[in-house]
Image (cartoon, rainbow over all chains, first blue to last red; front, side, top):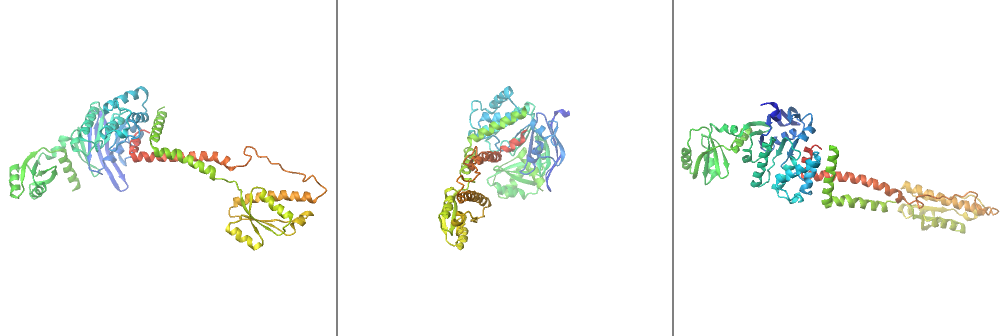
Length: 312
Length: 219
C-alpha cells in the first residue's frame, strides 16, 4: 500500500481540555474508498476526534493529515476538501430544497454549470426531483437526511465525515442512506462514520472502538469478532430472562451475560460446556428455558465486551 | 471571486430566511421605525413654556410692561405672582417655577429718568443645560428692554438705538432641534440594527443547529 491511498492519517492524536484528556494518543488511518466506522459510548471522544479532523479543534499533540493536509497547520484547507454532516438536522428549515442547495453551493464556491450539474445529482440522489420548491421544514426526516448528505457532498469532497447521520430516522430510510454511503465508497470517497446502531456498523470495512478517549479496538468487523474465537456465545431464550441471567451469572463457566432483546447472551469462559448441559443446569435451577444455542458474535457483543473491559 | 460568491450566497440565504421569519422581520423593520418615530417626536432640545414667577415690588406701568415682554417672547409662561421674597424658594423647590423675575421698587420711576436699575432673575440650575438656555433668553429680553427704556429716557432722540441686530437663520429658520437630530438618529439606528440583525442570525443558526455545519464549511 502506498501513502497516496491514504485519505486520513492520524498519529498519536491527543486533545486535552484543562486536566481532562478527551482524546488520548489515538492513531489510525482511513484509505480512499473505505467506509470507516467510529464507535464509542457517549462522551468517549468520538466527536472531539471528528472536530479535530475537520479543523475545528486544534490537537494538543499528535498529528493528523486529511487529504494530505495537516489539520493543525491548515484547518481552512481541510474544511474546503471535506464534507461534513452531523446528527442534528443541519439544513435551513425556512429555506426551500433548492435554496439550501444554492447556499451550500455558494459557500463552497460552486457556480454556473457545475452548480447546476451537482444540484441535479443531489436532487436525484436524495429522490427529491420535482420537490425543489418544497420548504425543508415540510420534508420528513428521511428526506432531510439524504438532502443534508447531498449538501455535504455538493463540492465533491474526497473525504466525508458523518457524525451519527442516522439518528432518529426510520429503518427503511437508514437502509437507503447506507446504500448512498456504499455508492460514495465505490466512487473512491473515504467515509468516516460514527453511529450508535451497531447493525449499521457491520457495513463498515473497518471499525474502531474508542473508549474513554483511547482506541480500544481497531480492525475489520471479523477481526474484532475474533476476540470471541475461544469464548463461545450461547443465546438463551427463557420466559423470564432476568431470572435466567441471574442463574447464569452464578455459574463459574460463564464469564458474563447481557440481555439482547428478549434473549440472554452468555459469554462462556471456554468451549467446554455444551449448550445441552447449560440448559439442564438452568432447568435444575428452576428457570424455564425455551431454547439455547451457540450464536455468532455480533458487533454489539464486541462493543459491550470492549466497553466493559474499559470500565473495569 | 470565490469570496464574493460566498458573500452573495450568505446574503441571499439571510434575506430569504428573514423574509420567512415574521419575528425577525418585525424586529428589523418595525423596531427601528418605532425608535425613529419616538426619538423624532419626543427628543427635543427646544426649551419653551418656561414656568415663570414674578415678584413685582414696583407695580408700575413700566414693571408690568417688562413682565409682558417676557410673556410675549413665547418662551415664558407666567405661572404665579409672588408678594414676598420668602415665597420664592418653596416655589423653586416644588418645581412650580423654573425662573423667578424680581423687579425692585421704583423700577418705573428710575428707568423713566434713565437711571440704571438691577433686575434679578433666579433660575433653577438643576439642569445646567436648560438653565444656560433660559439665561440666554433672559439676557436677550432684558437687553432689548433696556435699549428701549434708554431710548425713551433720551426724549430728544426719537430714532431709537443706533445699532440693532436683525438675525436671520438659514436652513432651519425655526431652530427646530428635530431637523438636525433625526438624520443623525437614522445613522445611529441603522448601526444598532446591523448589530441586532447579526446577533439574531447567529442565535438562529445556533438554535437550529446549522451553526455547526457552517463552522465546518470554509467560510
